[in-house]
Image 1 (cartoon, rainbow, N blue to C red):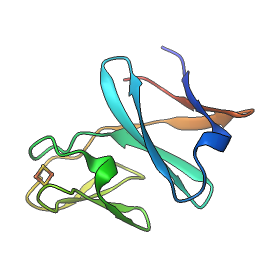
Image 2 (cartoon, rainbow, N blue to C red):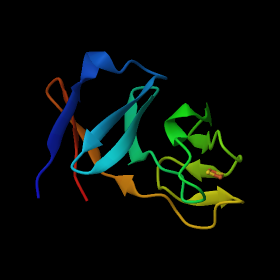
Image 3 (cartoon, helix red, strand yellow):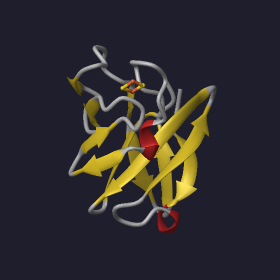
Length: 102
Ligand code: FES
Protein backbone atom coordinates (compact mmCIF):
# COMPACT_ATOMS: atom_id res chain seq x y z
CA UNK A 1 0.00 0.00 0.00
CA UNK A 2 1.34 3.43 -0.84
CA UNK A 3 0.26 7.00 -0.22
CA UNK A 4 -2.43 8.35 -2.55
CA UNK A 5 -2.83 11.98 -3.55
CA UNK A 6 -6.18 13.35 -2.39
CA UNK A 7 -5.83 17.09 -2.98
CA UNK A 8 -3.44 19.91 -3.70
CA UNK A 9 -2.07 21.84 -0.78
CA UNK A 10 -3.54 25.15 -1.94
CA UNK A 11 -7.02 23.59 -1.89
CA UNK A 12 -6.89 23.24 1.89
CA UNK A 13 -5.87 26.43 3.62
CA UNK A 14 -5.01 26.70 7.33
CA UNK A 15 -8.04 26.07 9.55
CA UNK A 16 -10.04 24.52 6.72
CA UNK A 17 -11.13 20.92 6.37
CA UNK A 18 -12.28 18.77 3.48
CA UNK A 19 -13.68 15.29 2.97
CA UNK A 20 -12.19 12.96 0.38
CA UNK A 21 -12.74 9.35 -0.58
CA UNK A 22 -9.80 7.02 -0.07
CA UNK A 23 -10.65 3.54 -1.31
CA UNK A 24 -14.02 2.79 0.25
CA UNK A 25 -13.59 5.15 3.18
CA UNK A 26 -14.57 8.79 3.64
CA UNK A 27 -11.67 10.68 5.17
CA UNK A 28 -11.77 14.10 6.81
CA UNK A 29 -8.57 16.07 6.32
CA UNK A 30 -7.84 19.06 8.53
CA UNK A 31 -5.26 21.79 8.12
CA UNK A 32 -4.49 23.07 11.62
CA UNK A 33 -2.11 26.01 11.39
CA UNK A 34 -0.31 24.38 8.45
CA UNK A 35 -0.19 20.83 9.83
CA UNK A 36 -2.40 18.21 8.20
CA UNK A 37 -4.35 15.51 10.04
CA UNK A 38 -6.70 12.86 8.71
CA UNK A 39 -9.38 10.75 10.39
CA UNK A 40 -12.27 8.72 9.10
CA UNK A 41 -15.27 11.00 8.60
CA UNK A 42 -17.53 8.60 10.47
CA UNK A 43 -18.18 8.93 14.19
CA UNK A 44 -17.81 5.62 16.03
CA UNK A 45 -20.98 6.30 18.02
CA UNK A 46 -23.60 6.51 15.29
CA UNK A 47 -21.82 7.42 12.04
CA UNK A 48 -22.00 11.21 12.48
CA UNK A 49 -20.10 13.27 9.88
CA UNK A 50 -17.15 14.44 11.99
CA UNK A 51 -15.87 16.97 9.45
CA UNK A 52 -19.07 18.96 10.00
CA UNK A 53 -18.33 19.30 13.71
CA UNK A 54 -16.82 22.15 15.68
CA UNK A 55 -13.01 22.05 15.82
CA UNK A 56 -11.25 23.52 18.86
CA UNK A 57 -7.50 23.25 18.51
CA UNK A 58 -7.13 19.59 17.53
CA UNK A 59 -10.37 18.43 19.16
CA UNK A 60 -13.38 17.75 16.93
CA UNK A 61 -16.86 17.58 18.36
CA UNK A 62 -19.29 15.29 16.56
CA UNK A 63 -22.20 17.37 15.25
CA UNK A 64 -24.67 14.57 15.97
CA UNK A 65 -24.43 13.92 19.74
CA UNK A 66 -21.31 15.77 20.86
CA UNK A 67 -18.66 13.08 21.34
CA UNK A 68 -15.15 14.49 21.02
CA UNK A 69 -12.03 13.06 19.37
CA UNK A 70 -8.41 14.15 19.06
CA UNK A 71 -7.77 14.46 15.32
CA UNK A 72 -4.02 13.92 15.88
CA UNK A 73 -4.52 10.41 17.22
CA UNK A 74 -8.15 9.45 16.60
CA UNK A 75 -8.57 8.91 20.36
CA UNK A 76 -12.06 9.29 21.72
CA UNK A 77 -12.14 11.87 24.52
CA UNK A 78 -15.77 11.94 25.59
CA UNK A 79 -19.03 10.01 25.41
CA UNK A 80 -21.32 8.98 23.91
CA UNK A 81 -18.66 7.50 21.61
CA UNK A 82 -16.57 4.80 23.30
CA UNK A 83 -14.29 3.72 20.46
CA UNK A 84 -11.44 5.62 18.80
CA UNK A 85 -11.96 6.82 15.24
CA UNK A 86 -9.60 5.61 12.51
CA UNK A 87 -6.68 7.90 11.92
CA UNK A 88 -4.72 8.07 8.68
CA UNK A 89 -1.12 8.97 8.03
CA UNK A 90 -1.06 12.12 5.93
CA UNK A 91 1.87 13.92 4.32
CA UNK A 92 2.64 16.69 1.87
CA UNK A 93 4.77 15.75 -1.15
CA UNK A 94 5.59 18.83 -3.18
CA UNK A 95 2.19 20.45 -3.61
CA UNK A 96 0.20 17.25 -3.07
CA UNK A 97 -1.61 16.18 0.09
CA UNK A 98 -1.32 12.42 0.37
CA UNK A 99 -3.03 9.90 2.62
CA UNK A 100 -2.02 6.33 3.41
CA UNK A 101 -5.06 4.08 2.85
CA UNK A 102 -5.98 1.58 5.56
S1 FES B 1 -22.85 10.04 16.08
FE1 FES B 1 -21.19 11.09 16.94
S2 FES B 1 -21.71 11.36 19.02
FE2 FES B 1 -23.33 10.21 18.19
